[in-house]
Structures are given as structure tokens and as C-alpha cells.
Image 1: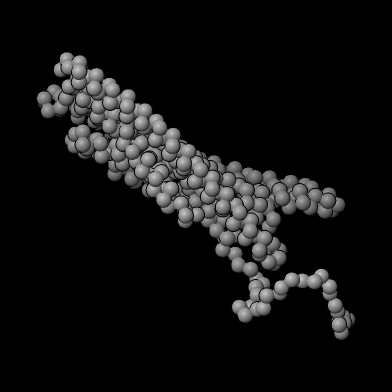
Image 2: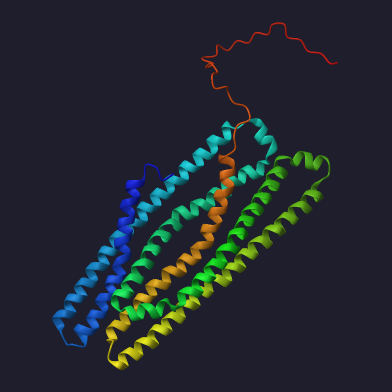
Length: 336
């Protein structure tokens, strides 16, 4: 679904990269304003830094707005094409497919699973691109500012990788199970509503109610387990960010005491560190949404990969225009 949009995506990524680098440059300017402007008593240098800070902020706002709008437009077009292809493929399948699959299962593919993808492509795609580039730019900017502060900040990276890997393995299976449970509830509801006359005619209301309660309870337990995983992962990432800030402040204080670091550089480093962990935290919150969309795409792919049971032979002649007249000649039917 990215075919035909490569050039537009390249432009968007370029704008997003420049927009992500802007906050890093702004913190560098803050450090310079403190060390070479305020502490040195240089009013001219301070004025230059203030003007540059405001100019970069305005440019970042314009580029950020353009990035969000363009990515949202691309995401909407992709969802539109996916819905169209999915519906066209369903209408081309043989009747045997619909007799083998529950109507509610098919409805879940067309509705809730596509909606899960739509949420990621409309909002999550922008967050993913912008925050990823901001994270890379912030780490690079931190090392350019002072490589010692960068090394101290990256001490929390190994435990962060371990926690992320644990969440990745567990959440993929959990969110896949959530999509399956939602499809089961949707299927049971669709069948119950469509066949309500039969259900009431045979006095099966209580049986269907028990079946619905069992499926609904299984859906609740599956969602609860997925949320428990998120409740462990997100605070863990936030805690690692706090530990990194404390470590950088402590190490920076020792360097300032030793005369090898300026106070403005430390303040800029702490501010830049927030640009590292704020995108990381937002990406962590987005990760569950991406996992749900990945599981939904797996379910949708089973529909798109389904093949028709009845197809024309390769050398079949085209039927042409049908006149609308049917003739039966020597057609008989009998039992036995």
C-alpha cells in the first residue's frame, strides 16, 4: 500500500527529520545562552541566541504541522484502499467460503480489525515517525553536547532492551488473542441477531445467553491480561528515564565541581535527555496499539489470502454479452 507514495513518503520523512532535529538544536542554544550569554554578561550573544531559538521554534512548528497533515492523509488513503480491496476480494470468493466461515468472523475482519489498523495509521504512524526521529536526533545531540553525559545516560539502555524484549514477546501473543476473542463475540452476536426468529421459535434464548456470557468473559480476561502487561512495561520505561536523569545530574555535578563542565551544558544535557525518554515513553505507549494492529493485519491477511474454489480454466472462452434467454433441451430429473 506504499506503492505510488514513495516520493511523498520521502518528503514527509525529510520534513519529520528536520522537525525532530529542531528541539535538539534549541537545547544547544539554551546551553550557549547560559554559558556564553548570561554568565559571561554578553547581551549581544544572548540576544542572538533568543532570536535563533524563536526562529527554530517557528520553523519546527510549521514543519511539524505539515508532517502531521501529510502522514494523516497517507494513512487515510491506505485505510481506504485496504477496505476497498478487502470488500472486493470478499465479494469475489465462492459461496463455499461463506458457508465455512461464520458471518460474525467476517464482520470482525471488516470492522474492528480494520479499525485497529486505522487507529495506527491515522495517529500512531505520525507518533511513530516523529518520535523515532526525535529519539535518534536527541541521542546524537547529547553526544555532540558532551560525550560523557551521553555515556552516563546510556547506562540504562541494557535493562531497557531486556524489558522491551520481554514485553514484545508476551504482548504479541496477548494482543493476537484479544483480536480472536473480539471476533468470537462479534460472530456470536451476528448469528444471534440474524437467527433471532429461530432462537425464539426453539426457546434457545437462555442457551445463547450462556454462550454469549462465556465468550464475553473470555474476552474480558484476555483484555485484562494484555493491560497487565502494559501496566508493567510503561512504568518500567518511565522509571528508567528517571534513573538516567538522576545519573546525568549527579555525574554533571561532579564534572562541574572538577571544572570540566559548564552549568549551561549540564542544563542543556538534562533537557535533551527529556527528548530521549519522552519519545521513548510515547513509543512504548504506542507499542501496544501497534501490536494490536499487527494482530489485526494477520487476521485480515487470512481473508485476503483466501482463494476462490471455483475458477475459470486458463483457456476458457469469454462468455460475452448474455442475451437473457435460457433454453432447456433434454433435461430430466428423477429420484432413484
